[in-house]
Image (cartoon, rainbow over all chains, first blue to last red; front, side, top):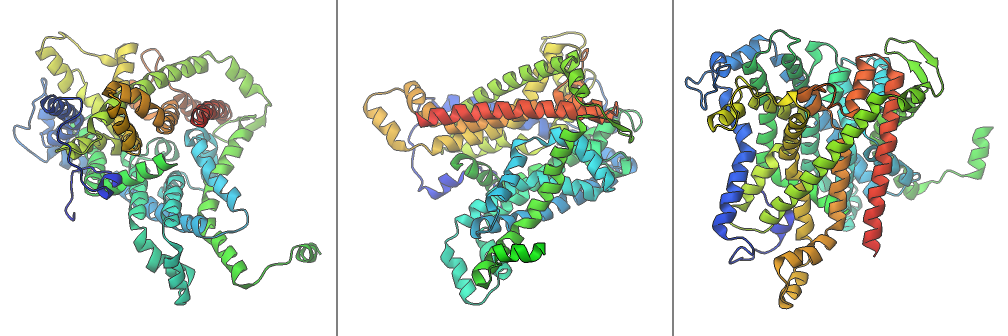
Length: 298
Length: 305
């Protein structure tokens, strides 16, 4: 399938030959589709309505009672968003997310390769250090992390956020990549080494193409982590021009940046939500495979 | 001299084998160093800070256990811990129930089932903060569609202000969290179910077992590791809730919806008392480690039986 698909299948199903199921086992088909269809609409409706409403005019957005569809579709809210300087925060989010995706994916590929394919001293201990990040919540190290980042002049810095988000995404990334590399037969690698390729060349030219689905999973996970993160961004940045999108929206909501304008706030939420949904719809099979694959086996 | 001693007792190995060893270390080192610097060191510093009166603006004095004594007598902290626990219990139960229902409904390949799964998982990828703004807007008394609908169908008349009442504020947050995360619960349970061999069900069918019986005697026991994983993820996630309360309830009404992370944030970054904030953090860390260990133990022993 080369086109974006909105059909979520799990890897197990793709591997298994299709099996015809004549009838639903415990629920008549009509009831099944009615109930599940209604539920599915309930799940998607808020997001759909958010996007549709962003094309209302500011006045229509603030109207009581609310209208279902924009009566005169307009880009007024988007224009106001730009006028309010929020494009800057969208750019911040883009930069932080891009940096995190690149750093976390690259480091996770290297470390996953190292842990899966090499034996070295302190290997167990080092892996335990990575594991520890899963056992202790980031939220509980916020006070000291702030002091440390501040000492390093990394508060109010997009680079500082990239560092923090990379560490958020690394444990999951290293786990996924370690499993992906371990599943590749050793013979593949040995052939390349016999041909005289160095370890990095082997990794990049031979192995990475094979584990590409795993790499995609890690990149997606890092993307969602960095794009959506709120608490760290709220604490580690204190100036509006450094805020990421979720934080500047919080500022709008409390009215710190002037009076509350629902149209602008919700159009900002469109910017925060739509990239995630679009990327999910296009690449969902990698994301789902990565989330469930390691979890259920481990 | 130290060098020669270590060289004498532990000769540096040479050759391709040893080089390959060092190479492996080089591959993992960047990631491990980053985790050390941005995670392990802060954990240690948090522990140290909790023994200090450490203001955000630089003054710091060693105060021993003062922060912990204060914590022990801090009714706000215990209230908040109680609230977070209540929230965790409700969210965990709701996620497991709804997640199971959805997983059972869509676990088999069937026409259109992929679309249904996609719809249920879609909210998982947006942020909690974003989902909270969305909720706030949908429920706004003046311009929100939900109060408008409720008034139209005659369920309420007059004003709808869900966040002025403890139970309705909590209910809104629970619905939001279930909407946003149940897709992940469903996926995990679904893949767990798909990993169970068909033979069990076929054998049970031969014996004349009904679906409910199969679910109780085959699916549930074999799904224990998956359920354990879901429990751990949900419990930890709920104890760390912040975004939705910060944005939706802002702790109200009457400070009744303040999760522990909110207190940590407030002590450190509103009241500028990082030492006390760190002590609360250590408290939260200990509670979570205990909860995780208990859950791991339960999952383990049941597996061994």
